Amino acid sequence: MVKSKISHRPIISYRPIQPSDLEILEQIHEDVFPIRYESEFFQNVVNGRDIVSWAAVDRNRPDGHSDELIGFVTARIVLAKESEIGDLLRYDSSKVDQTLVYILTLGVVEGYRNLGIASALIREVIKYAATTPACRAVYLHVISYNNPAIHLYRKMSFKCIRKLPGFYLINGQHYDSYLFVYYVNGGRSPCSPTELIAVIVSYLSRGLKSMAAKLRKNENKVLKWPRCKETRCLISTQNKRSLATESAGCECV
Image (cartoon, rainbow, N blue to C red; front, side):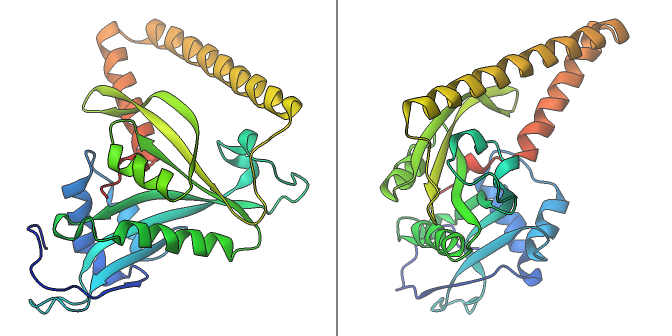
């Protein structure tokens, strides 16, 4: 795998990720992301199980590895009505098949960064979403300290529509996340004062319900286990939550 700056002129092409990419895909994720992904995630990616993906390869590599991944993007299709941005998206709720594309991970190996590969991979996702009639938006999370990724998404006309405090838990430390959206096929955010008020009320209501549920859950755990065991359980649960969201905000661009 390329790590140092390349000295030749690359010829970049893009294709779907395939089963033969499994080992290198796992290696790149390990190199560029601060968390570890379960093997099931990689199996789903390379076999196209509920995940769409694109690989970047350099057809002009002098080492002969012209079909080896030097970048990738993975994404999942979700129903708009079941997504976390359903309250921030103006769409026809009577059409139950309307969807969104959620970017899971995006990465480029070190030697190939700043060549426009990440932008090209994102454009592949946008093109896929735009040519899917039922799709209304592409969205993702970005960890708050990833300034290159934040700059890239803003440059590509993604809209930052929400900040999520403490969204990620990495090595025992919480980090904020930004939620970015790119609208396609007529999808857009609520724009009237009434719609905006409804969004705010919905968001606050869900936040209060979530807090109440966590308090009840913690009370039950205190009754059942000693305090030290409760703490370990909470950390484990949070780690699973971070992994379940695929930590897409940790893109390396």
